[in-house]
Image (cartoon, rainbow, N blue to C red; front, side):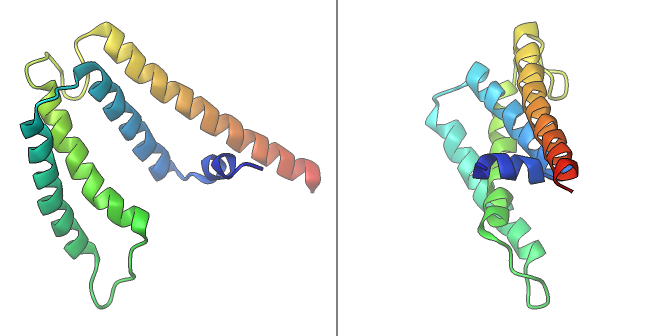
Length: 133
């Protein structure tokens, strides 16, 4: 079985939500991309400062070391939040929802496709497990 399929079948609710956040962010970047270097450099700076603060808050002598993906996410999330905020400014968003219907439908549809795939794979894994037992 493919490692990707095994990974998707093993996703817990929190990771599924994080993947949907990433999908929403990527659709927004697709629709609202701004090539201005200042936007991306500022986002990198915020990511470094906030990511380091988050890293310091979850590590220490009595805490378990983080795996590389957890550390990466501690820096990626502030980058995404900062750049998302800059990209949507002045485009009529309500909270995180775009005013443009095509963009909203594409964002929701992309998340829906991802959720459908994950839940179908989880169902098939459960079905195969029962079949083998």
